[in-house]
Length: 468
Image (cartoon, rainbow, N blue to C red; front, side, top):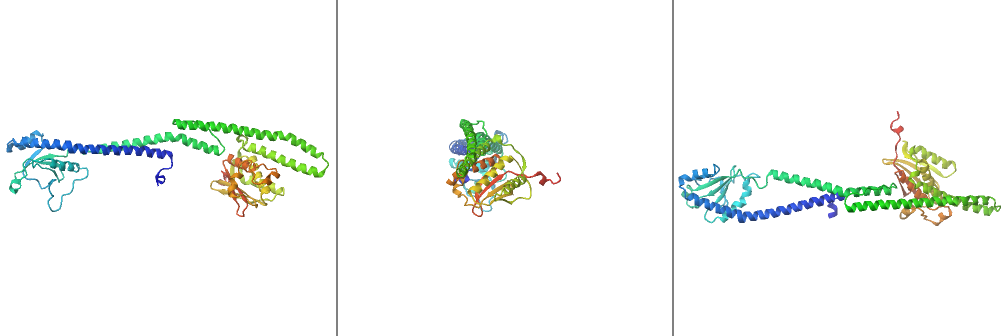
């Protein structure tokens, strides 16, 4: 369940981790501050305010009744005033039940009275001399403090005095600018987290791209950057590329040197076989030498196909090139036929000789290890072009197709008697990857082996613009 909700990329996970940590810390800080703020309000602010109210009541009791209103007005600089009457109908005392009937509308959201309601309740509980504190219910926020004892006689309530304190100048605990600043800070932290995650994951992204290019046969070094771990990983990757390049160079040297060294003995064997008079012996020796020559040619072709510097890319039309290749095989009497060709020309920047070597190897494998006829088709796809070479033999099982693509892989012992060293499919795959394509082995509809070569071709310019 957790894996389903988590983002897949490392960068997004780092952003989520950073932002989640910030939010958790902010929530913990807010909860802690709220707890101690409430505790301070209950234990300190309420007690301090209750003592102030007691002192204020005692001070006003010493002033004659007719002078109290003027005293309060002057002492508060016209902010507070005194009412010498009963509790106004738009006022509520927190410890009493509200009067019956339709209740007045509650204060609007953000009104300071919503915040002070709990404070007034605690203050009424703390006052023990019948002093009462109330909040207004009208449109203007006000605080009422009784200055005389609470009498039970209705007539006495008409002479009750209340100190009225306006609350419109008291700012709410969390003002809008504070919220805007907090949200801006969270957005800034999110941007920093994204930049920090990008800085960490950027070297890994480059390394993944370099690994893809290495798999495509186009190795490219990376620049070590980022934290120490990613720098070390980049350096190790470059060291691996150097080792692979050295190994490939040694392999090409060995493969190129061996056929070159065998050419001399093979030439001498050809000459000596021609001098032999026994026809049976001569025929057998000629067949063995032909097999050896075919092996040498396979080594040479594999070395050339695996060397990126040996390719010469030029614009070519695949339709015309494929038709010429199949015609050459048909003219030689081989059971090879072209069964499908798209009407639109498909162009490609490729090496005609290398692609010809690819197609010849596939046709030769189909004739030697499958059964004729060999059917060749060219199909246009949204991604490019697909060339298929299919035979009517037993095919290759799905669990052995990966093994068949490896160099020097021979799936049956009969191939040792046909001059095959297991480089045909490996060479074809190498040539396809050099052209930014791919080679795969599939099962033909009738059960034989079908080799699919996908190439990044496009519609020829003449077909897209006939007037050109």
